Image (cartoon, rainbow, N blue to C red):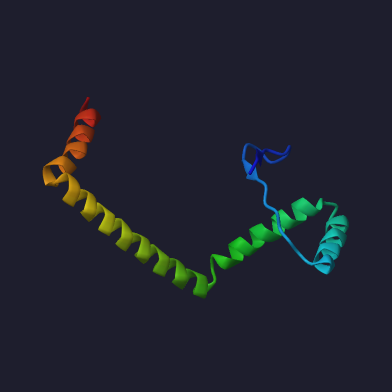
Length: 105
């Protein structure tokens, strides 16, 4: 994927996204873009941003996000425990001690 910063978009990096759609939807999108005096790309970006914002308040999405977060936390805890078992408790404490020394220096 390539990243570009189109003029007028500040310093945000944009990535290319290919979307397959029906001919009818594409034709309607082209008409809307023309009516709004925007490119099809800009019209698509605006629609996607709107959908993302709308999804952030969808109760079903929020519930699933909490489930995914809990799964991630369980997996992370399992991995932390495995690392502690492999390295031993004294080795696991060393990075924290080094960080504390670095912070006071």
